Image 1 (cartoon, one colour):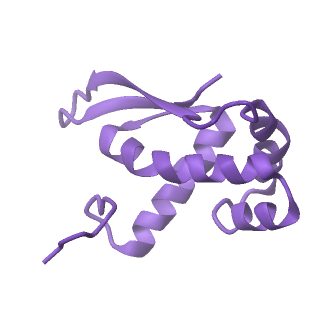
Image 2 (tube, rainbow, N blue to C red):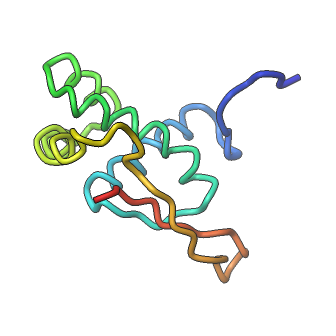
Length: 117
């Protein structure tokens, strides 16, 4: 029984799901916009927003917490020195999902997950 279990499993085990989320967040912060399925975007959106909130703080502990999720040090630096200060005035809602329509191969709903300017 799966009562009161938060989060989406997306047909993957825990390690695969965590690796996929880490990859999606790394690419989101690298390119500031990624094209993915709606289910993946909704699953990773909250995690990405938590990292941006940490980046706004910008202290050593926040950096280490971010580095536990993002392996690329250049992306961590970008997150803390560029994205974090840009989002300093926003109370939340750092990302948005723009619907694109269905993918032609399997009819999966596709979206852009992007950082708000």
